[in-house]
Image (tube, rainbow over all chains, first blue to last red; front, top):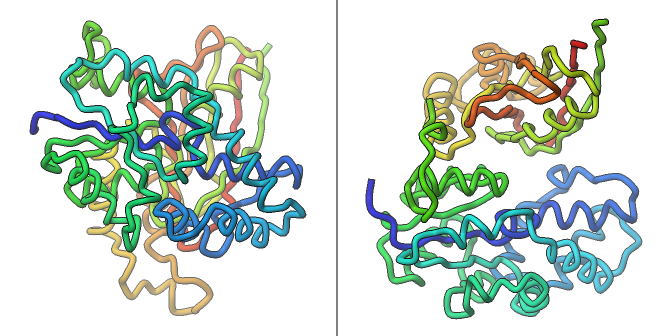
Length: 214
Length: 140
């Protein structure tokens, strides 16, 4: 296993609720039931296009509204989503703060910078991820999210792909990243993030042998 | 007195080896049941998916996906496709090779899972579908 230099935290899903959760909860308030977003034609494509900036935030919101037949307006959906995304996943920041200092910590943002500013202010993310360590995929001009982002992230950090680790809540994306050559770990909650770092001996905390996988 | 409590949960999935971690939902169900000691049965009500207890680690999931692709490739002339109703033969075979349900004990009101054990639903349907899982706690 290569030594890891750079860590990429996919913000939506690892630090804040996932984009899927934010959309689902935002639409759910109005529809009073969670819609099966996966059943919506082209939902993944919509999210990808939004995430790499091909689709503006209002166009994205309008497309969601049209597909779930919601009576909401794009502006109010945008507001609701920012609100949803401004909630910190409980305990998500502590394991990152406990990382050994030599790791480059990068935040990967698949949201417009204007959204991020509001979220970051509310969650004080810049104390951990300064702007120079924040990668806006929405400003990347990538033709497609996958697999292009897997090449783009190490390039932005100036680090060889094999020396990176992507922390992502999206199980499928993490598998695709790994298959592409970008080491990745699926992180479903803060406890898993802490365990991942402890197992890899990346943290200043003492490794507890009970945590060894058997 | 032994009691049985059941609940159905719904999951949104787009299939194609979609791995859904439902551990938190099962934990919450056991807590809500109020039962202290017994077993919880987690059962997927579909024939193109499975439930495993395993480590939700990217490499393991990638390996499992690779192995399933090798022994049950999605592109294969499955006889199930002859009737031309659906084309998810690999999903059915995978479901048969794995299992639709798993049991786990709970002790003093808490699931007795190992450090890296998670309940993982693996959905191999070929379309986006709502998936249903029955959670059934039996105990006292």
